[in-house]
Image (cartoon, rainbow, N blue to C red; front, side, top):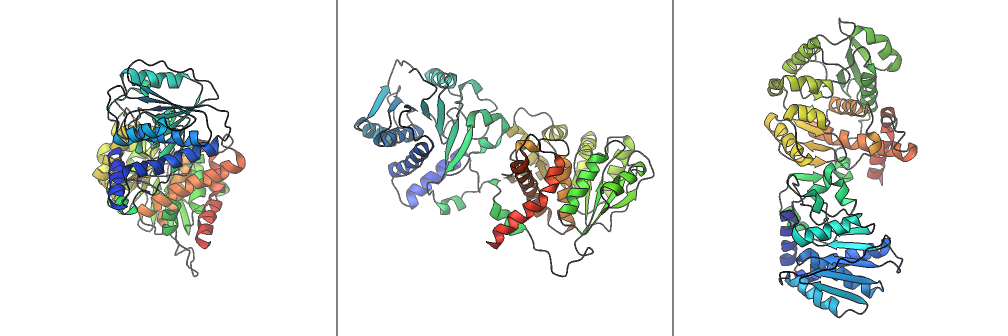
Length: 508
C-alpha cells in the first residue's frame, strides 16, 4: 500500500474528482458517510451527546456533513463552525447550509467570541478543525479550542488526521496544540506521521475508511513510502522443491557469541534453522562449544582460537549467507575480525547488535560493505551510526540516506519497522506487537534473515519476508501467551505457525 504525503493525498482527491468524474461535494459526502457509519457502529447508544468542532476548510465540511448524518440518524448533535474570517471552503459552506435546515441538529457558527461548551465524560467529540492541508502550528483561538478538547474526558474522534498534526514532519510543531484523538478515522489510507512513535499519543486507534479514490490516479503518484501487505509477502515466499536436500537449501554462517553472551548466538541459530536453510555453521569462541552443541545440536561449530571472544575471520567463500553480531562484544580483537569479514566478503551480509556498535566506531568501514548488505539497528544503534536525531521522522531520513549512500538495506527496528532500501524507498512493516520489546528479539531476526539469504532469496525479498514473518510469529505468540509474558524464544517457537499462516492463505 502506498503512503502519500498530505499534498499527494489532495492530488489524488483532485484526480478522482476530475476522472471519476464526481463533484467535490459528492466526494465529501462519500467520505462523511463512511465516518458517520463508523461512529454509529461503534457507539449505538443514542443517549450520548455528540459535539462537532469544524474549521473553515474541507475537513470542517466533512465534520458538518457528519453532523447532519448523525442528526438524521436520531443522534443529539451540536456542531460548532469556526468562521472567524468569514471565508469558508465552498463545500464547507454548502454543508453548513444543509446542516442549518436539518431537523434535530444544532449549528453554532462562531464568528467572534466563543464560549467553550462543558464536555462530559460520555460525550463524543468529533474533531474536524484541520485536515491534511495544515502546514504550520495551530495558534490563536484554535489553539485554545484544541487545549480545551484535550483537557476534557470526552471520547475524541478525529476525521482523517488529528487537528494540528502535520502529515509528515512535526519537528517544529507545537505539540501542545495537537488534538489527542481516541480514534482517528483516516480516509482511504494512513498518513506518514502515523508511523512514528512520538505521534502515537495524538492519533490513538487508527481505522482506515476506503471511499473509492481513483486507483488509476494512485498508480500515477510516485511515493517512496509503502506499507507491506500480506499479498506482497505471499508473492515472494517460495515453495521448497520436491527434490530438495540440505546441500541445495543453502549453508549459512553466523558469527556470534562470547563468554557470557551465548544466549544471543543460540537464539539466532535456532531462528536461522527454523527459517528453512539446509545447514548452519556458527563461528564461536572455544569456551562456548559445549553450550552450542548442547543447545543447538543441528548446528555446526567453527571454533575460534580464543576461549572468550571472536578474534579472527574464517573463510566465508563456501557460505551462502553470513550474519554477524549477536553477542560478539566490542573487544578490539573482535573489531579486527569484523573488519576482515567485511573486507573479504563479496556477497551481501547481515550486521546486527555489537557488529553495528563496532561499525559506528569505524564508520569508514561502511564503504567496504558488500552491495545489498543488511543492517538491522534499533533506534539507538542507528543514531550511533548517523548521529542524534530530534524525531523519528529525522531518524528515518538519515536511515534513508545511509541506505542510499552505501547501497545497503537499513532495517530500523520497532513498531512499524522501517526497511530503508538502496533505491530510496521505505517499507513499513505492519506485523509485530509491544510484547516483542524483549531481550533477544533482534537476535531472532538476524537468524531469520541469515536463513532466508542462505536459501537464495534476494536481499530485497529476504528483508521483507524476514521482518514480516518475525513480527507475525510474535503476534501469534502474543495471542496465545499475552504480550507481557512474551520472550524471544517464543518468537522462534511460533515461526512455523507464521510460515503456515502465510502459506495457508495461498492455498485458499
